[in-house]
Image 1 (tube, helix red, strand yellow):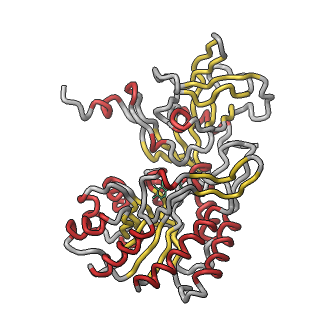
Image 2 (cartoon, rainbow, N blue to C red; image 1 turned 45 degrees about the vertical axis):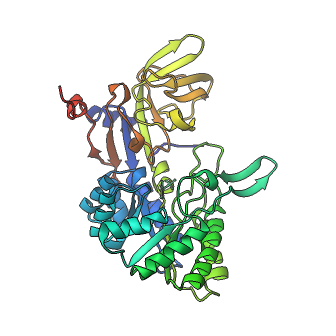
Image 3 (cartoon, rainbow, N blue to C red; image 1 turned 90 degrees about the horizontal axis):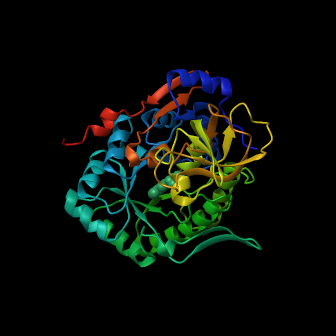
Length: 418
Ligand SMILES: *Cc1c(COP(=O)(O)O)cnc(C)c1O
């Protein structure tokens, strides 16, 4: 059973100052999740989480994570600029991009970020762009094929398709890239891979770690390049559906430790640092999209129209993603109605829920859409001239802080030439 971190009374109070729709994040939950992650990997002295900025590119959130010892993983110019303005520098910044423009490599290098190269051809592109290669550098691996875990009668617990993904280098290209980087002056090397997204399994990171650790041992022997860190990237998922159970980060950390003991330590590589780039796991459950029911419509189906739309949360429209919905004040009421909960875009995919059993919803009811703290606001867009919402922080003392104001029509028109 999913419970919101916000009560009806709190939401009503907030709404007086910040009209719905708004995204709100819970400071307590964010800090607790970051601490659990750091504790799970406490056995590794060099461990560092580089929060994937694209999940929640909001300074008020990045600063909380910085206080918890996290760095940031950036993938674009503006993400790098935001990281810099939030006070991240040097090796607190990972730059994992692809099809990277030269100016982005330039800024990443100026900031002293760790650059994670997506392709073997980027080695010379980087060298030509900068006139040197950084002493610390990372390469992204794509082992191809399919990646599966936990086969059962129902299918695979985790299944993804690296062979169809545009990211990373082949195994042979890794050797070429390391060799060339060493020639050009690189001194410390990292290895990175992202093989499956939103995994609901305590086995994903340990399985990925085994692949990367074994590859790192081979690469170090083949090329003589000192490998100083291994980046497990993102992909640890969250239970969007109420019948799914959450990953246990302590179990995940222990699984990676086992792999480390089995593979790296015997190879004399017991000083390698482990990095992660989690976005969803850290933030998704710690954010809600709060919206008000403004219309009801009875045609061939029952519709509830809300003041948020896919421009504020795109995942249901583009992936058919499930996001749980709670009607505030009706947390324990029977779900004896079946609704499509829809936004106002002129686009029929603009549905937060389809055929969803919910309590009876009246106009004016406030709905919480769960697990929107990552890849929620940040995927927003302006279709139909819809304006982006505000972002708020529910602080540990119960007060509410504005992290980003809602857009106004002036913002929307600001780039136009009339
Ligand atoms: C998107 C992304 C992440 C974060 O993914 P989550 O699913 O939010 O954990 C991490 N690293 C890279 C390179 C990414 O592109």
